[in-house]
Length: 538
Image (cartoon, rainbow, N blue to C red):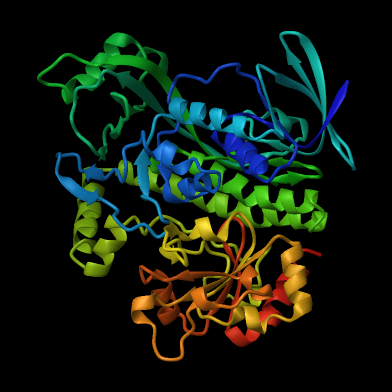
């Protein structure tokens, strides 16, 4: 028997699980296929950022995941003499969530698997290995092998989130472009940790750079560069591992190692993220060294970008060509992050003591400049995804424009008095967000109907009641009628006010379901703006 699904996802790592939850929340008929019957108990990814948490917020899992994470974890950089180069401690939350958080991956995956149980439209096939892929013009056919035999799945689309050795990518013959670094690193995960250092530490050195990361539930990670001439196999021996971690525990018993592995660092990106009705996401699409902890987070950004587009096409709201924008938007941005992570790794090992002294001088000098210091401490050096092609109104892009970038998420107050993060009001849908009242009145009836048929929202921002001036509308007193479909919020924390003051020409934003800005304009442009965005679906 052949079963049909709107989307078949291969791989139940973080990217696949997030995608399945997003599509389940959108009520698409989804199969998630995973070779392993149980969650792998070894931690692999260890850091989750604010944008990934914002994706989890979409289906109600940000707080449950963050509950068991080390929030806003700082990171210290040391030179080879043990002196602190920088203590990076981000406190700002432009996405509404802490920017740097440390988590235990097995716990994350268990929670995301449990979350799937809420969606009747999602079928989770664990212990199923995909052994055949037949891509067609109108559908995709996959065969899985499991304990009871074989199962045939047919999908409108398929997504390969099946890791760095992706079966789907190999069958489609999509090459990985880039390099595999000649260096190797030893990764050691320990349990029953006793070292109370609630920050990540990077020990840069011309000799052996290393790092350590505190994880929840008494776990800790160590990473050591393997030097030229050292035998990688010998480095994983218990005695050698004990020798490397012993200096970190001078006064006590060593913690218990639970994983000792050698990794080659890859800096590779797939030549394309779409092949007909099959898409690649996560490690199947890009591989990067772990120096900046963005591998998993980039994968979650992939599927957050892809999910709403699949939902629009499957529902018949958009042409299949909308899915081409996934490759347009994500491939170059992912490649940029891969290159950035690779460059960060070079800073960990200066070529010589002279090079290190020059680097240290420049680094410490920069921190004496207020703007540069904030740039380092608030992690503003992290590349910000910026979509310059795809589902964006490119004509409005400029140096300071938010078009193609993530819209910030401040807190707002609803008309019934609740304090909410902005996304809770916008919902997982397209939204016309007006920072000033009156957008609903500027939309023609035809455009308003077309907008509503997409399931899109109109949200207007009002000054809080305590600041209201003579002649300003109180949305709570708006009479009943068709305008009641327009949502109103109070800018209780001033975040949207400050955005308007910084960009007074951008009074209205079209915010995509993945929270990226598709277009901006003035209040007078509303009808024209909606018209142009609707054309992007054709």
